[in-house]
Image (spheres, rainbow, N blue to C red):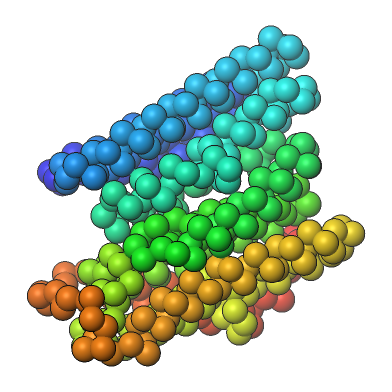
Length: 348
């Protein structure tokens, strides 16, 4: 793609998200979300592959539906209460509709079925943008909707953690596994958003760092399915030895960074007298951990000649910069000891 066009599209992505961040009026927030969607669509369809075009069409239809629902709900709120302000949502009907519209936008279960299919049709770079940057604007609106319908948010969060773990168990395609991983992490954020918005923000940032590392590792190895991971030993032995730590950090295993948000969320849920909810969330995390362990096994414990269905790709020199991967991998693995400092910052 022409670098000038690429720069304009990235500027559009940034502008849309910034407008939504800065807005206190529903029409302005909706406009930011629409600019965001329109900017990423050419990036998704740039390869002109039938799967990419199909994924782009599915994404456009889903986002258009969610945006129309959000606009209808905000208009209904203005009609019922005379308020266009995001933080003045008092009527339960438009509040519930907007919550469901935002859940559809980010891919929370049970409105999740578009996300694995769309991510599977994209290349890893666009998939990374879709899994990280595109979640920022809807979450900014989610955080401003406090207080909200608590039962609805808990149901959305629990369903997402369960389906995010369950859906990834039988997958062989890495992008679909990462999509279900995204759904599960979004479920954890939704569970805690009404009790501690700052903890939701911490979980979102941690998820971004871990997902960034995972996508870059797969991109360097040009891996799109589990079998192709078995050839990564010969290509990038150092990255391959670090990859299981990144994956287990995504799964939330101590003493890695990914354990920090899960630990703090379970602690907060217990403080709110919700021990059953905390136990169920912890059990659903085991489902996700299983498919991260599968990927770790395929990368480090399976030598290529024993893996019958893997085919060794031709190895070219990769122009990808190693510094971003080095920084994000260090953050993915080593930040757990800084938990007291991070919690102190969050309570300021």
